[in-house]
Length: 145
Image (cartoon, rainbow, N blue to C red; front, side, top):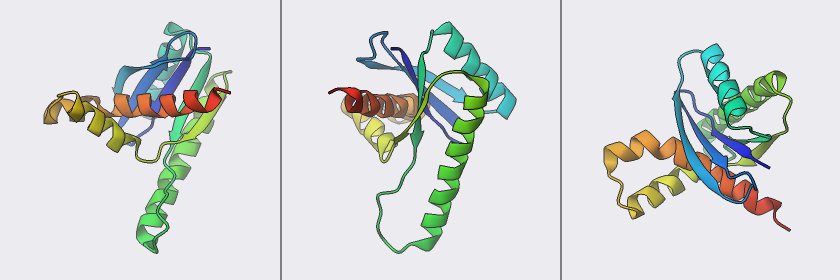
């Protein structure tokens, strides 16, 4: 099964795809958001072009148990935005959509990029797609028996 992974953000949306067997994840790119309609049009184009069979959306759940109320409210807002995005996408496609915890995937992506020798400005250009890879790898690993 071929998956599309989405690292949803207010300004940028990182994308990754799996191989047709659903075993490996590869960065696909980043959509710089302009309008909601343009975002969905681009996603539908990619889903068709890539023959996607299911979508994985990163859900930014916090693993912080601290008492920081402001941060908690902001996190809840982001979680609601991602869930609304996934629901809107679900109304536009007839494919399964899986929500997956994406806790620290951007940090993991940045660390991997630095480790492989990618420098500052380039990291900021590709980190969202690589975060989508981390999300997809986590999902794929959870699907193995």
